[in-house]
Length: 339
Ligand SMILES: Nc1ncnc2c1ncn2[C@@H]1O[C@H](COP(=O)(O)OP(=O)(O)OP(=O)(O)O)[C@@H](O)[C@H]1O
Ligand SMILES: [Mg+2]
Image (tube, rainbow, N blue to C red; front, side):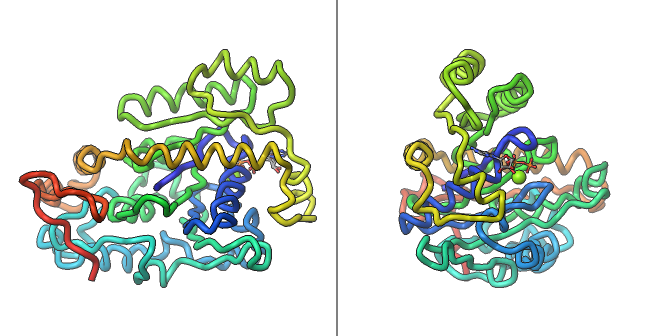
């Protein structure tokens, strides 16, 4: 299950994604956390020191390795250079699995033992910090491009999680990244600005059938609740209150996850239930179609010009990414297994 946390700057994306990751890890659920925000803060929120977090090898820095591995012997992709962030898998491509080692995880992931191991463990990946160049016109340099490629080549199953701490801005809308998740949690404070980001995201997400639920954060009292309920309606999944546990972490006096206040724990259980409930709604054909849609869009707007070729030819029309164990859709080619 692929889960994203998005929202306005400072709303609590990192805090809530780290808490959700801790909740899953404590329950023994296999979890991969991805720091995909402009400000890379997820590592420290999971207990790493700033130095340890900064030493994480960024996915973006290993793009050639990632491309070379994923393209496998897909005849539609003659070289790693020919791949852009939206290049879809096809017959011959190598796929990633969360429960198996691969050179991408070997190169970039780090295992973090939570609360000295008592809180379980998490595989942590980071896209890398953004530079000025990433935020402007040069969209193919986008740090999240490596993540998008990985998600488009990932076959994940029920009961295993990838949780991404995302940036809500145009970076994910510029590509198909925002559409790669089974469920997106939009973290919103009970303020006009928090709700404005929700509306913007909702409108974009609706167009592509992206499942979105709002998680109210820093909610204090009934007026806050009411405000969110009025502005967000049925999209509001739950609200998270002010947490002394989170404040203590912020002061550098972290406490074990087991000591998180009960309302917070109940909220995390609800997030987990909502995420699990998204599983039956997965539609791999639609997922594959969307990656083709965004690939064509990126190819036309800049990819073809840069590659000097028509990148539409990278699409393998007979290929559908699918979860292992489900029935193969009629008339579709079999999905290759990772080498
Ligand atoms: N429920 C909460 N209770 C207490 N403090 C909170 C809570 N949620 C978030 N905070 C605090 O609010 C601040 C912003 O939270 P956080 O860093 O998680 O937001 P963010 O959306 O990831 O921000 P950015 O956009 O900068 O990445 C932090 O100081 C965090 O400790
Ligand atoms: Mg953050």
